[in-house]
Amino acid sequence: MRARAGGPLPAAAAGAVLVAGLGAWWVRRTFVAVTVRGYSMMPTLSPGTRVLIRRGTRGVRKGRIVVVACPEPDTAWRGKAPITGDLTATEWYIKRAVALEGEPFRGEPVPAGFLAVVGDNRYSDDSRRFGPCPMDQVLGTVVRTLG
Image 1 (cartoon, rainbow, N blue to C red):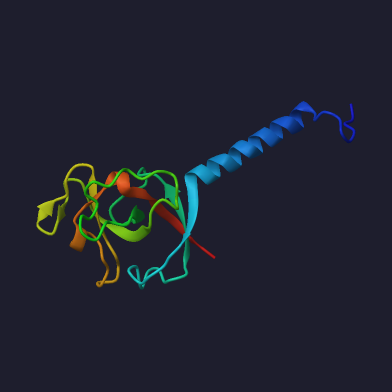
Image 2: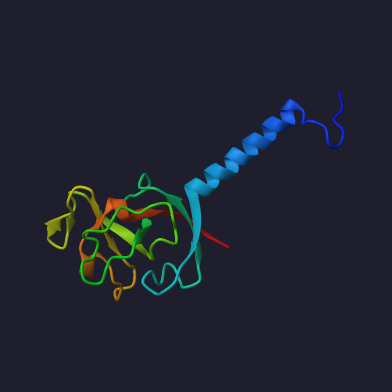
């Protein structure tokens, strides 16, 4: 049977459209591309570098580059609501995870549900200034640089 213009889609074509739509939704929900601003991750990441982020905390490991919500200047991450999927709801930091819960950071163990993040540039504002970051402030981990 042949389809004609304006007629119903064959079942296989409708299925392919559905699969493609679900695939696009999954990619947009799972990954996000961000552009690095600032110098805190120099020399690893320069301003203007685009990176692909896998959303969520599943990929957080010591040594991985992560994107976290910016801390407040006076209160750091204390009292901040957990982040949502809305990328425009906050400003973001890109840092390296250097210690996970229970591991030492600056002479103390990192509390449960937190991680310590530090920029590769020694002049970075990070956990050295603000203390450990709650895991509910993590947007995700860098998968790769783009272009």
